[in-house]
Structures are given as C-alpha cells and as structure tokens.
Length: 423
Image 1: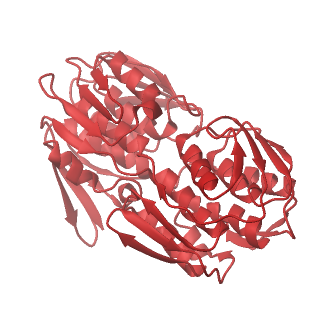
Image 2 (image 1 turned 90 degrees about the vertical axis):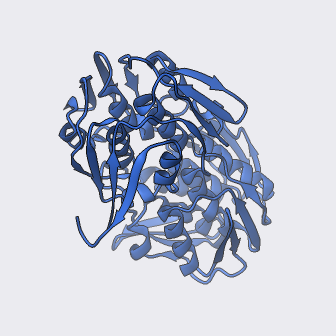
C-alpha cells in the first residue's frame, strides 16, 4: 500500500498539462458496447478507475489495449451481459454498462455499484428512466436485472439532475424505437462528451450540452474514434494547489485544459485574490499575497462542482478570516475534515455546512485518505503545511489523478511516493 510523503513550504511554479477526464472516459468506454467494431479513445488517462472499467468490459468479451495515451477497444464480440460484483464493487461508474446492454441486447445483469465510501447515491433514477423506456427491471440478489425486447421512446423528467442516470438513459435511448425526451438532463461536460461520441457513432441527439435532450432512436450505430476532453477537476485541483502553496512572484500554467469548463472555480479563485489569465486551452495563475475568505455552495454544472469542495476547504483553511462551504449535492461529503483538523485546520461541520476559520499555519502530520477528492485536499494542505505530512491510502487518489505526484514535483513540490505493506 502506497503513501505520499510531503515536505511542505515549497514554492510552486512552472507548467503542467491536464490529463483526459476520468468521468468522461468512464462513460465513453461503455458506449462501445452499442456497436460492434474497433474504437480508439485518445487522451485517455492511466487511472485505477480506467483499469477497473477495462477489466469489467473484458469480462464481457471486449478486447482493450493501451497505445501511448489512447485506448483501443474492440467490441466485435460481446459474450456476456453480466457486470459481476467483483468488478462493480470497486467503482460506482460501472453502472454505465446497464443502458447500452439493455439498449442493444435487451438484457443486463448488473451488480449494485460500489466506489467511494461516503454518501447515499441511489440508482433509482437509472432504473426509473429505463423502465420508462419499456425495460422490465427487478432488483434481486444484489443485482439489477433488466430485460426488454426493444426499448421504446418516452418522455423522462428527472426529479434531480443526475450525471449517471442521464448518461445511462442516453445510451439506452439511442437504439430505442421512436423519440425520447429527457428533461432536467445533466449538462456536465462529461455528459456532453458522451453525447458527442454517440453523434459520431450515428446517433440522432438534439440539445447535447443542455438540460433538454431529444433523441431519435436508430436501428444501428457504428464505431467511431474520439478525443477525450480535459479533466476539469484535475485542472481545478492544480490551480488550488498553486493558490495555496505558491508565492506572489511565482506563476503556474496548466495547459491542455478547457477554461470554459471551470468558470465557477476560476471566478472564485479571483475572489480569493489570485490573478488568472485564461487562454483557449490554458490557465495561468499567480497566487494571492493573502488568501481572502470566499464562501462557496456546490451545485450542478455550471455551478461550483462538488468534486472541488474538499480542495476548496483546504484552501480556506489558510484564509484570513472565516468562510462557509455549503454542500448541496452530497450532504455528508466531509470525511476529509477530521484529517485536515489533524494538520491544524479550524473547521466545524453542521449538517451540510462547513465553517472554516483560517489559521496562520498548518503543521505536518500523518493523515489518512478516505475517498478520491478527500485525498486531493490532504495533499494540497500538506504542500502548504510546515514540516512533513504523510498521506496514507493514496490508492483512492490513483483512481482519479494521473501521476499527480509527478506533476506537482514538476512545479517544485517536494512529494514522494513510498511503497510498503502497511502504514
């Protein structure tokens, strides 16, 4: 089991490149089930979650290989319609195979998903959406068992905007008979990327990137190649690292990103006191002399992303004053707070609201990762803390950040991955 050892207080400056988006990749890969043939997904990050999805698809008969930064997927043979517990338990995004399996083959047996340890994230919206399309679904023995002769178009109105449910219903509806309308659809860039791939495959979708989708079902689709969008959460994490651990005479430039996907984060960073320059595919940040306290409320896209909440709390821990962080997506997503307190942060949580009173300094300590974004917040705090910080269980981090320690080292951080049996 690996850990990171961080010696804080080093100035960050220089240039790094954002990787392909984890959350987009995990939707694009199952889409290859919709049509037999060969696909190349360029700019695909090397992550534990991508490996998990690869292993899952391989159990269904697909052949997957990595060539440089691309995944080559051959879906000519699909020999199984089951997503077994041993793979699905590792990652909630495994449920993305449900829609394409039912849409193309009329059957799917998908284990109820696992993933991060925090928060109730029910699958009822996925199930209700597919039932509206005509699938017969039973949940038994820990599995979602779906059957359908051929799905038929329907109007679906999500009570809550759900990225996963929108993606699943989209993939099912593109092969359904007739027209499907999805209202209150998720507008996240990762879902728009999925829509763009489906269009390249011959799907008929109107309104990609909006909350109103109209899908005219087709009889067949064909393979297509695709370039995965940049990871906006990784980009945001690197920008917060620069704001937290940089110096006024330093500058960090993140390339191969899409600033339009991060407007809520970059606006808040300017409110903190950072100076930002936004280009077509890069963001430069000069950190603030003094970190100003700035409140945030997480929201669906294009609001402040819940996946940046933990990193923002780390930044606010050293602000000059108090700030309020309100979590509206996953109300109990604060498992990082006790670990940040171990580093000297002053944070209190009541229900879905964290109050962060900035302190003069953080001090290195041994802390434990509990989930993916919590891991990121602990690393950011460790970069700014005095002394040495050990972040344990970084396998959480490896699920969603591609060689983050190498990127931070390139910027001047003193961070080292240490392997061992148990820490």
